[in-house]
Length: 507
Image (cartoon, rainbow, N blue to C red; front, side, top):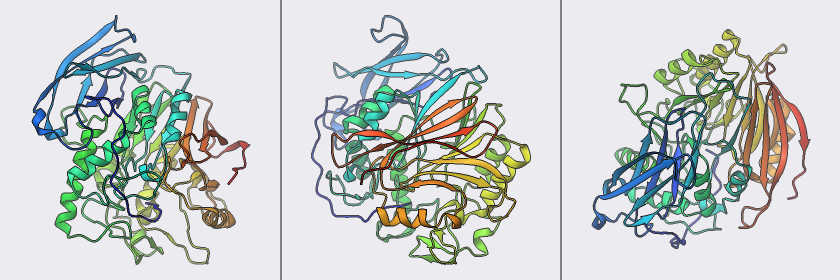
């Protein structure tokens, strides 16, 4: 993925925290009748504390903040084998209902978290609001965007990956590791990030749905391949597999996610389909775990010019099983909007200023067959309201995907909205001028702004999907201000955009 230059880091300091719940509480993977509650028990934030042994952790969830209407309660154990993290998958809840919850351990009670279940699938829903976040690097600045997200009170936060970075990309705040390799390293990163008060508050107040991208493990990782770069030193293959396993374990420990899906199917997977009433079908994709290795001659393993292999229909970004699941189920719920929740840009994004085409090595552009099959599915089924929501490129982006973007009579098939990074660097004026100066080479792009950090607020109704680009004026200032940069609207039945308001950034 897009990464600024790495730098050396100093040992991170222990931010203020409240024992025995230093990282607060969180909720995620909401359905109409259940939700996952999360916390971690520790006397000190960093490191595993085996001397604590197995700790009983009680929990309660209620319809009111005073807990007069407790609907479920129970006790689970936190142990050193999972960094004393606990996940409670609470079932039997009412649909479309706000709940409050807390944990109790070692004689102390956690903060009270707020969450809510989804409406019943198919039930009429007037509107729903989702904050979309991507790419946060603790070292690059503050997580001011989350403070604004909490103030906007969306129904849900969707995180599109790069929740952590395995190496530091900035020098604003100290990092706990130089380059994460071990389980201890990855746990330290999640701990450092979750000590951030704005991120912790966003988990406290709003339920999350998450997918991963590459930096949860290592830059541009795949199931069996690893692309060493200036951001990741070269390591033996067996060491990479051990590293990947450690990174995935830490992710599972620290994220408020439910892993086993499809009823009796015990396989663990990240991709899933979540339906919000009759309004939104969320198809969340894992573009990392099953992909074929990037093809063609790769420039420093980062860029490529299209070749026979990148167009080979047998190659897949999603892997055959996930791709089949997607194309067979896409649009099957009957919801007005079908949203692809995935990590990056789907449409072709030519990075070359010359006549040759040049693309990111690990993007959808390296897997034309997968992209073509998804587009064909949408086209053949006559699905009008498909929107891809992505991240990764550290830029606000709005675009349109066509049946073939190079045809004169091309037809728009789906809309695309991409969130900029929460705070990771996006390059400056040079990148902005380059992309915006040759839009004719990228006819799908309707808007591109890489100079500002922030997030996207989606306001969804049956008539339209409105994307509000919220930008932070300075992520290096802990008191940075957030304002609306740009607003666009996708009308139901019409792939494409209506532009509402443009605000010129002050750089």
